[in-house]
Image (cartoon, each protein chain N blue to C red):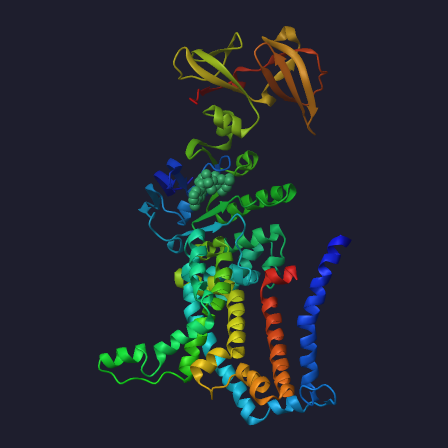
Length: 347
Length: 275
Ligand SMILES: Nc1ncnc2c1ncn2[C@@H]1O[C@H](COP(=O)(O)OP(=O)(O)OP(=O)(O)O)[C@@H](O)[C@H]1O
Ligand SMILES: [Mg+2]
């Protein structure tokens, strides 16, 4: 990853009484695909708007290539935005929408024509120049919006839930395409979504937010495998989250048993929480496992079965391609590397 | 349903008697001779031909001229006003719009008399000028006085549709323009103004129609000799007694108005969807 391009330092934002961002520290690098992930209302859009310049932070700094820009109006920033509802100009056709920014900058007409046709090709809208934007499908409008932003050759592209309005299939296609476009133009993408799958599959870096606070920053694999707290674990995917005690490095106790694990650096006897991913648990014969129980329910989910096993202390959620009858006595087995120990959150 | 439909009947009969019958009479008068008595009528198109006579044509031209002046002044005063109002919070906006309409709550005659006392040769403005050592200026019975009266009366009809258009603008379009590098002025002319055009066209047509068909204000502020289309019609019916010619002018005016209203509806996307 290249140089730091955007830096947020202690950024807060108040709307009246309500503090929406409670001190955001974030570094964003060149060529990075960074995703802001979090539930509705956690401040993702607000963060993006502060970077774009539509909102000013209440406190803190926004640096662009090391220069403070929090007071700079949006039209002077080298970032462009793809708006959630596209925000295409209804009175302009596809070509003029895309050319808007270049026209403002009084770029030569022939250069505009070249750049527009190049970027329309990039987003797969060749031959759409004369079309009325209001008559395009959602996916096509989305592409126009991306082209309109990219044609200005920004250093950073901000995308606020750009795929939110598309149906599942188109969404998948656009995810792949967006990633391809990002590689091709080689600029930083800051992408907002509340869909964890989307975040994990597209990003270089995922920033998990909740209630105006960054919960964890990391690669998708880090975030998925090593969630730092219960919120991240819960938000990233269906999980078994278990109260536990860290006896010493690499030894954790829960459900009345001690388990080897790979986590270190906790205090001895520290109260922690353990994440067991549903797909990491194997169902075995009861005599081959410490934790035992009976199959409580089984739901077929297309590829796998979603099984709930009732044990003495709790219900465990398990994903497996095998079939187990409801009522069957089973054991639950998992290896040391499947146990993810997290700091306990104070609620 | 049947029951309710029956309830509507008196209203339909009533409006037929009060609106449709007079309208039909106007159509009938406009293509006949013989005045008020319907006993010995003869069909003719002379009434419409008469409109082209120079004296009457001059009235039409003057009406259009005054109409245009009123529209222009209303536009250049009304647009900034509507724009400023639209920048406030929604609550404040509705109060301000109410304030804009306050003049409409005062009887038009009263308002017009107020202008007379302001504009007349020894009125308030002139006394003020004289006390400052200037020559008094004749303002009453000029195009100026009529325009002032008309603008004052019809400004809300320009402000309200423009404000409606402006307040309906999707804020993210304005942000998109900023985002693409347009400063405030560029954003205004390239985005905001274009999106407010339906309101502008509505306001322009509305004030134009009201101005060319008004007759009280031109009569009081323009004097007895000052004729606009409205005065011409009034005269034909009341003092001249040529109901046929009066009807022809009314009909022509009605057609123009209907045409312009049709245009106006076409401009407003919301209206066409409903209708
Ligand atoms: N202009 C504003 N005035 C007052 N409150 C606001 C404003 N903009 C946002 N908020 C509040 O700030 C909080 C965070 O909003 P934000 O739009 O950043 O959330 P988000 O993470 O983008 O959510 P979503 O996924 O629903 O888009 C919300 O509680 C919202 O109500
Ligand atoms: Mg949002």
